[in-house]
Image 1 (tube, rainbow, N blue to C red):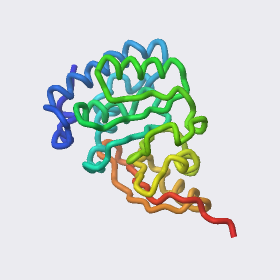
Image 2: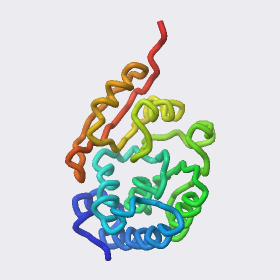
Image 3: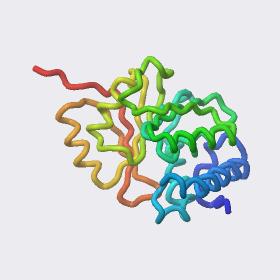
Image 4: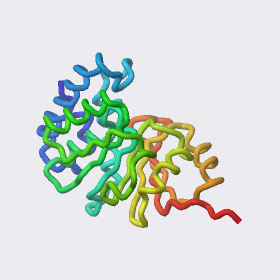
Length: 215
C-alpha cells in the first residue's frame, strides 16, 4: 500500500500530484516484490520497508537538484535506486536517466519498470568501466547508492564528469574516511548534506572532480 507520508517531505519537488507519483511508486514496489524471488534486488530485511528505507531515501536527492539538471547517469543501479524513484518523481518533464547495471536479470527488471511506467530511462547492460563516456549524453548529475567506496567511484565517474557535472552520492558513516582516502589521488569540491533517512548517513555532492597531477 502506498505510503504518502514517506514521500510528503519532497512533494514540492514532484512534477505531478503526490497521489500520481505514489501510484507509480507502488507499481514499482509490486514489481520489485515480484522479481525479488528471481533476483535479489534489495536486502530481504528491507523489502517490507521500501517506502521509508528505499523510496524516501532516494527522493531526498530532489532537494539538491536544480532546474538545469536534465541528464542523469546512475552507476550500479541494481534494483533501480535512487534513479527509478527520481525518474518517477520527475515523470512528464524532459529529464532523462541512463542506468548502468551489468547484471542481466536486473537489467531486465529495470527495463520492465521503465516500460510499464513510461519513464524516460535508458538501461545500459554493462559495467560502468566498460562504457565509453562518448556513448552517453553529457551528465548534469551522476548518482550512486551502495555501489563502491568513494576512491573507486571517483575512478569510475571521472570519464563522465564535465565541468558542469555534479555527483550526488549516498554514503554512510564511513564517508569521512573515504573522503580522506580519495584525497590522495583526487581533487574535488564537496558539499556534505545530512541524510533525511539515516542518522549516520550523508549525501555527498562532488563537483570539479580531477585527478591529482603526478609531480
